[in-house]
Length: 148
Image 1 (cartoon, rainbow, N blue to C red):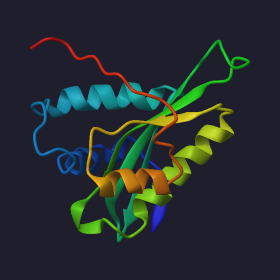
Image 2 (cartoon, one colour):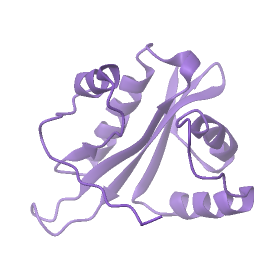
Image 3 (cartoon, rainbow, N blue to C red):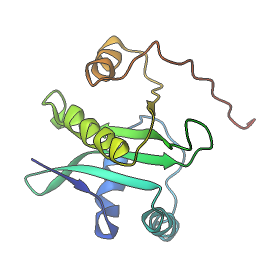
Image 4 (cartoon, rainbow, N blue to C red):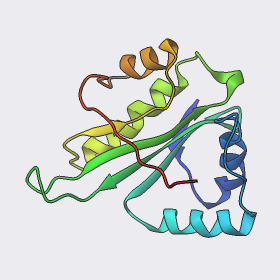
């Protein structure tokens, strides 16, 4: 198993992995749009994408956003999103190792906290995030979405 930062050539594999993340999602954009967004993400020091490579294949990923901040002595905070492990590779410790890497990078960037939210309500997913070191009681999340 290798955990590494993802780069330009990893986009198509990452998009395929994301297809395994949600049963229902927004329509997939054109490859040109995805490539443009990917290029923008990779050019910013605030966005980091990590992947687990197993047998030459991307099987898990998450992204870390390091957000500059004016409180907490101007220390940034981290936000982890889009945590996904391919269904065939779950329950092997890959996701925990991936999250540990992302959190380690956040601490190296002097983040004072790292947040992660999930829309999943099943106990197995909640236990997974708790066992990876995330406190489900630490904050209350509120989400706003545009009207349909």
